[in-house]
Length: 237
Image (cartoon, rainbow, N blue to C red; front, side):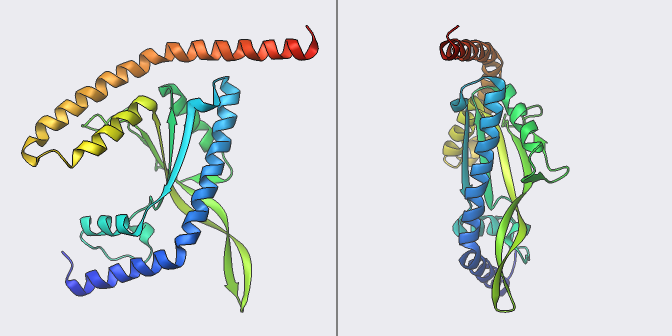
């Protein structure tokens, strides 16, 4: 555990960072949300599935949340907070159907604006955690325009900021939200039983995810039929 002097120094460093760069973090978050929504729109159009079947949300980690993570890690020395938490900016994509998670992952990899960090992908859908947690995690460098002071003049320069993106199915997301809500309310002496129980729930939901793919095929068929009907109406055929 760090001594009090070191703890105070690191806390003040974090406070200064968030005070100075908080607005910039929010700008990058907004840009990430726009980029992810563009990619998801392209994917759903290409797959012939409803746009609402893929939902994007983003968030910026708060100072309080960062300080909590810093404490949990024992106050390691850092210069930039991203050395402690590479998820200062996070994006989450929730798909109605599990196989779309991989389709979305592929289209993100093709983006020229979101550069994946090599080797950062973690596929917890194929290989779930012991609790049953399932999701695809990846780190990426988000390109953006930054304002820099240059000889008393402000100029726009190219820059990048690390972001974390999670991709999961709607059932996987429901499981994650449920366990997040109850996790810290479970007494420590019950934790072994808790992990077994939530894992069993996750496995049942994973089975339902596979069953739900039949519904996706029906939706694709209906969407394609509507598209053809629209073309017939437009050209009078």
